[in-house]
Image (cartoon, rainbow, N blue to C red):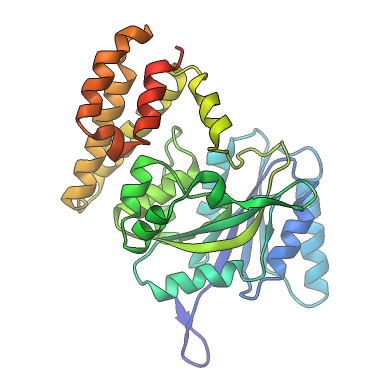
Length: 336
């Protein structure tokens, strides 16, 4: 980071924008980016084989703004064959040159202080590598749904207190609370986190790698309108009563295999870090791996799972590495 004419630290900000057939909402999103109180220097648009003129909308708007008073650099990366959400965002993030990088969905709307709020966290807490925030949930037309992202995800006061105290790692080992649409990262984090494992979603992986070093902070208020329109590639998943009951009816085999693959990828990465992280992160990651190995090995018949589930519950790992009673019940009743 350099300094401006007054000697204050200056920060360049890039936007990593992943798109796929986003023509319906992209212009409004781009307009909100251009209206930021802390201007962005670069937008890297990585397009995943759109067929609806998504890229042309971005190019036209930036060209219009450049002609009437300036606009950020626009870098367009076109994928003839779709890479998928995680690989597409990895491509966008890797091409960004700013000191800080904002992850951006194609269909949201940023509040005017979205960038400045996150930059303020980086300035106020040296050493952090990732800032995430709450968001206001809105419908397809942008009307508020009466709930925030943190409320939907049941992010608790204890979770937020842990993040404030530099213990985001403990929270994220249990479950993800970081949503890419609200996230800003240091460019160095992207370089450390690559390559992104296929078993992880990009935002969850970046958050976990940042948290290993205690480098996560949170803006505890909405700074984005997070649009829910039924066609989101990744949207806000409700953890209310109906959602919890629905999970109990979902077959467990694929999910548990995915959780195990994620734990294996994380353990492999942590073992490769030089210098190695402190004893707690390394030991906790191995404990998480052992927990998911046990869960994946449960018998198919529900009645035969009872004893091994009780045995695993007595280790305390359901509480340390998951949702406690909720996960115990899932492992007991979910079909194969």
